[in-house]
Image (cartoon, rainbow, N blue to C red; front, top):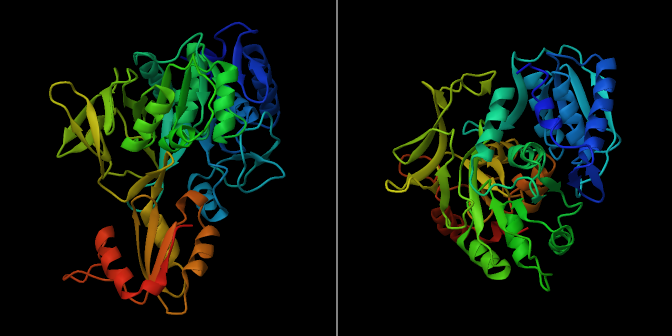
Length: 467
């Protein structure tokens, strides 16, 4: 397939008057194609062409999706950066990839509530940008155990291969289905499992303009939603909605990004009469496993999907890949001899092949479907001139134990973190003491239960409750 034609493979499906997506208003496939063509012409005039590298940082909207598809149609390599990131998080990523162009939201900054129908943007040529890595069309970032971001590059064949794996998953939404997407379109599950799969399969995409649970449920009823995609946090909130309307068309609830808590699974099933179906994947290659039959229960992840080759070594999952997905670094700890080490601890049932999640083998925590490197949070705390040591853990929430000057307060450190980290990474509990406990080898204790026992008993006044 020609380098600039792979997106046409998705865009040209369906008739012009077929519904494509619904938010606060509806968009047909013909309207989508028209908007993409207009943006293509604009980008052509500004010099974006085959081999250009473009960093895309826009508010969640139909415009965002149309711009992304137009850039791909021009043959550009698109680097996705979450609009919610603070400058201290975003600027190092831009320096790392050195794009030739910046396509960014205009006249706005900071967090955005909800999904918009349209959004304005500007296009700027950047000095000293480097051209696209040959063949790479999608660039994303993922946290790593070293605290440094991994730059992940995917060629068109990788993205199309993931779409094919979706199509092979029994029970997947298709033509006639109305898919409600609660995941962010800026991240892999929302983008590929939601936007691109809907384009390929003929399903109609429904994106709520707000994620307020009661309004989401009302839209599900009004739109005749047949399938909903989200994270465990979304399903927990939906389960709390009182006076829910009937949802006779709803047949499927899909969750990815993190393990579904047993309580959330049971509450959703009791209130909606439907089990949450798990899918599992990685930014590096997308969908790997899933079960949409409704029979898998936490911590089960389902079966490896057709097209994904996996192995389990010492309770760690490895996935077969022809090439390293990483740019600007070898990451030998991750990719060796054709196998990608996921750092996810799993168990595979020898009789059925079903994978079950056991936990992580590194410092990553998954919160609301987003990967957060706890090392990054520790580094931000240690950058404070009166903090000497820090241990960040994750149980129900991110929790930080900090050794610091006695004059430093938890409130001060919370403000410090909020100025340098996106909200999902800010510790919800902070405990400040003079010195943190260490083991017999002189190393900081990292067991959360032991830290609670030692730090809180020695310095109860330094504890900071939930935020």
